[in-house]
Image (cartoon, rainbow, N blue to C red; front, side):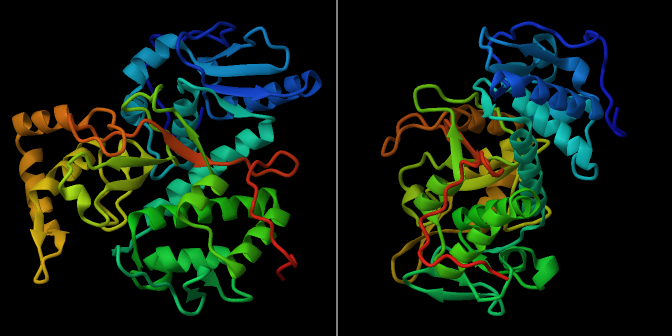
Length: 398
């Protein structure tokens, strides 16, 4: 049992449970039968090291090529009722900010609770995926930026810009270092301008590059070369680097989040969503009911405060001297402060916002929670699902 991990043992059952957990899919490893037993053994050892092994159910689902791990049903109901993973740290007394093992525990417990399966072809990819999520959380906690939807800037010692290729890395400069310099003022001493969407891309890209340095240096070389040639961003970034789970017709539970995942909060107000940059908010889930706030480093959002912030955008729409709409952030901050201090008002706002979002172009009944979440592709040699665009004249970066 790791230090700092404690909880109420009343409902625990000794040893693994060989049963099916109703509604919970958790983590599934699909491999040839000869490798499946090895993957099972390695993951069990991993769970034992973290003190989690006694609380996991194992199920074969009548599939000789797959094995599924999930949190025992009785514990799921105690620790995350209705799939509310935002309270895991509170229930289990986890200190994920200061104890890396506690962060890993929260990540795995949330994955073990998932209503759709996290699929992996072997244990190595599972372990890699957990490390990437830890990297994302660590980077997001250090990221502090200046919000700007009209312009952007990067450290000139590492980056250059062209309209055709976007922000690219200068030859001979490390992609990992360049991303840290652009996003972490403790390294650069400066805040650089970003939109929230691009900020999440840089945090995720940094975490992926850091993991590739450990598990797949050849793919890291190709990624480095890609960013010397052309940036991948927006819809292409999503397609190349991320997997999505949940769906419009089968949305994830409202309060289900895994640390290191990216999610979107939609602005359900028709008028204020016309302001550039305020259509919604892209954030990283940090765990412990905290979401990234790249504009105020030491003030992460809770699920409640994020919903209330988006709600009050509608009350802060103003026009500038040339008649263009903008959001007055000072008004937003004051309105949020007032709402958080008024339990009745806060509850009324959450009844509107704590719903799944409506389809694009629909503004009827509110709701800001997205139906899906996003996380990176697999990265290990031989099983990686991250496929970079074809790169002519590929060279190795020294």
